[in-house]
Amino acid sequence: MKRCPGCRERIQDRAAICRFCRYEFSEAELEGEARQRRINAVILLVGAGVIVTALLSDRRGSAPDASNYGPPSQPSLSQAERDLCTRFIARAVEGGLVMRRPKPDKLEVEDEVWAAAPAEVKRMLAQAVACEIWGQSMPPDLESVVIYGYRSGKRVALLSAAGLDLG
Image (tube, rainbow, N blue to C red):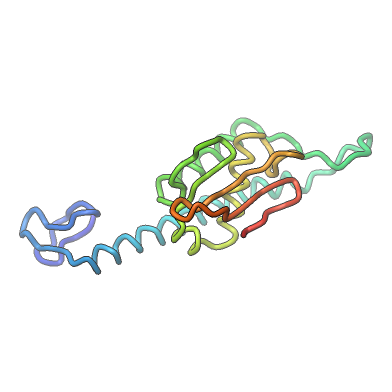
């Protein structure tokens, strides 16, 4: 909800005309409000991501099994931890960062919001998808999380066992 500058009544965020005094918002005002909502969504994601980051970084520091001579395996996350990752993704959808999820391991993000998001938020989103699907902070070998721009169609991020590629 926002306040109308004409009568100070509370109206819908996306309203172009106040239903009380008929004040008409200019295109510049509406675009500024939309941009502010996107910025707020990124800020909200950063806050929620702090929890996910702490969760995933604690798991990454676990000692590997000495009997395994291959690459160290990641410990599986609990169902409660996976649910936290699911909620993080849901907040990204609500905040307007994630536009579509055509497949479990693929996301389409709003290009402008993605460009404004800090690298840490981008990493956390990709890791949250891996957490939700495979129960680990990184995808297993031969698997990946791919993130595309919704409007541009370009790949903007790829998370694989090798790491995160933002570009």
